[in-house]
Image (cartoon, rainbow, N blue to C red; front, top):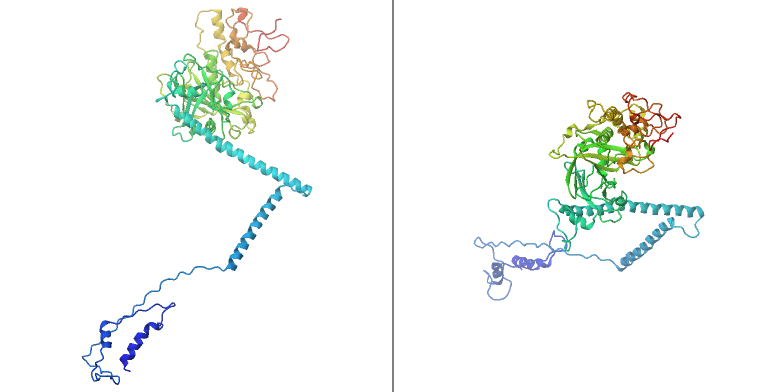
Amino acid sequence: MSQWDKDKENTERLPEQEPRGHREPPPALSFEMPENIRKLTEDTSWAGEPSGGGATPAEPAPTAESPVVEEPAVLMKEPEAVQVEAFESPAEDEAADAAGEAAAPRLVDRLMRLIGSVVPRRGDPPLEMVRKVVFFVALLTLIGSAAYIVNDMVIIPYQNQLEYIGLDQKYNPDAPTPLPDGYENYVFPDGMSDAFKSLYIENNEIRGWLRYTSGTGSWLNISYPVMYSGDNEKYLTRDFYNTKNKNGALFFDEHNRLETPDDTNKALIVYGHNMASGQMFAPLNEFISNIEKVKSAPVIQLDTFYRREEYQVFAIMVINNQDSDGPRFDYIRTSFDGDQDFMNHIANMRARSLYDFPVEVGPEDDLLVLSTCTALSSAKFNDGRLAVVARRVREGETRSMDVSSIVRNADVIMPLAWYLNQDMEPHPFYTNPDYVIPNLWSPPDTTDAPADPTTTTAATTAPTTAATTTRPTQRPTDPPPTNSRPTDPTSTNPPSTDPTAPTTTTAPTTTTTRPTQRPTDPPPTSSRPTDPTSTNPPPTDPTAPPPTDPPPTDPPAPDPSGEPVDDDGPSPAP
């Protein structure tokens, strides 16, 4: 066999042989003989070989003219990836199922053991029974407390916020909300603003809308309807829709009157809760310690049925509400006995204000008081009150205020408990019987008037009358603290034996001493002519009229028996 035949045979067997240097599994090789080689193998007429059969022809000697045929390179195909599926034997499946079935009882057993460790069971020792009962009660208390906190701090505030957002959208003084269908003939109060009509249909006890915001509205954004029910109890626990709600609603004091356009109020009082959620009047407590927030909110807006008014803040006070915390100041007065009484009330407010404001207040001005509760952390005593007092912006006056002039009051009179609970020296107001409230108001001087007994007496007693308003615990018209406030302003003048006597208004000044001593102190030995509850006779007034004046105008002489004179009424007849 020639070498050519050997090569051909090897070539034909090549697909059956394993290739060298290849990885498993071996690729399938394909070989296609070139056309020129195939023709050569089919051609048997070689030079020197007989055309007939017989012996195998001799291999021709290669010559220079013989063509050199190059075999093409065999290309190897990349084997396809074989996906091998995971296979688990039946034994492994059974083992996994058995493990799952065993895990379920173990989990149930652990849960039952946990429950059994806190729930009393029959056969437990007495001490174990007690331990489980205590733990179970504590667990229930914890769950109940958590639910209460979530309800008070999350659920109720959220519902309350949605309620007042909806009401705020209904109140738009510039574009009043149209009336519901069927209410075109509804009878509204005469002169009512159209902006209140849709809200009046839902609750006819609405009387106003209060807006109090800071410059940017970032921390103070009070915007609520103000209700009036004729008492100071209903809207402590009821909202605008008259449903039970611990947030309550803002409401006017029971002594205010807002029923007709002719109703006037020297002082409008608005109450609101200090809620831990930050709603209602809670932001007002920020004023106690932050003067920058005070400067950012100098103006309050209050709309009623008949007027849209703005008020400038001129006092922020912390007041005690319990007699045990010291003398009480009546900051919620709504009526006054003339200009002098009103202006002395303003002086008392300024003396108790945490800050001094560049706002003038005169006898002709009207007030707005926002009242809420204080927190123990800021007031240093329980059951305190915070009052923000403002006066109405006058006609033609700008609402702007020079807030840079707002400064802290260096001589502020705080409640007595504020000093005692912090081991501080009380203000001289509580310790010095001769202390006088600054800036008390006096009526115009009438000494140049013609000599008339009535005129002369009124002029000479003016300083004494002005001093009567320094009393910090009650206004002159109030009875002792255990009784309610009188509503009759004429009750401030004690009866006189002579109805024509013109100077009966000076009678209260003759039997008064300072009532603001600390509860544990003995009565002062000296008297102040400004306190109506004193039991000591007053000293001789250097400004008193001469003895030649008519007897009815003279102050009553002290009781010879030494018995105190009752300032709630005339002395007993001799």
